[in-house]
Length: 169
Image (tube, rainbow, N blue to C red; front, side, top):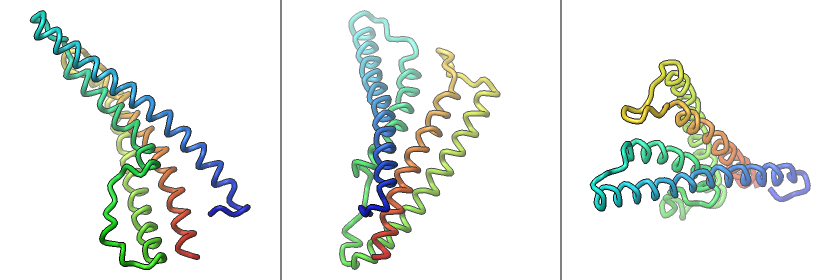
C-alpha cells in the first residue's frame, strides 16, 4: 500500500506508532517502579525486618500499567505470537486472506475487551472499589486498559487494510 493514494495511511501509521510508543514508555516506567518497589521491599524485609507495606498491591496495579501500555507497540514490533509454520505452504493470496481473518478476529477481541474494561472501570468508580491495605482506587487501572485498547485496535485496522490490499493484488 505504498502508492501515492495511500500517503494518508503512512501518516496515520506514523501517528499511531508515536502514540503507541508513548503508551509503551508509560509501561516501561511502571516496570521500573515495580523493580524499585520489589527492591525496597526485599531490602526492608531482609535487612531491617520491615517490609514495604502494601508492596503486593503496588506491584499488582503497576503490572496493569506495564502490560496494557505495551500492547500496541509489541504488535507493531512483531512481538506477538504467530504460528507461521502452518501457513508457509499457502500461496501469498491465501496468507493475506488468513491475515485478514486473524485481523478481524483480533480487532473484535480488543474492541470488546476495551469496551468491557471501560464499563467495568465505570462500575468500579461508582462503587468506590479500592485495594484492601493501601486503599488505591482500582477504576483508573481498568480505564487505562480500555484506553490502551484504542491504539491496539488502530494498529490492527492498519494491518487489516494492508492485508486486504495484499489479498486483492
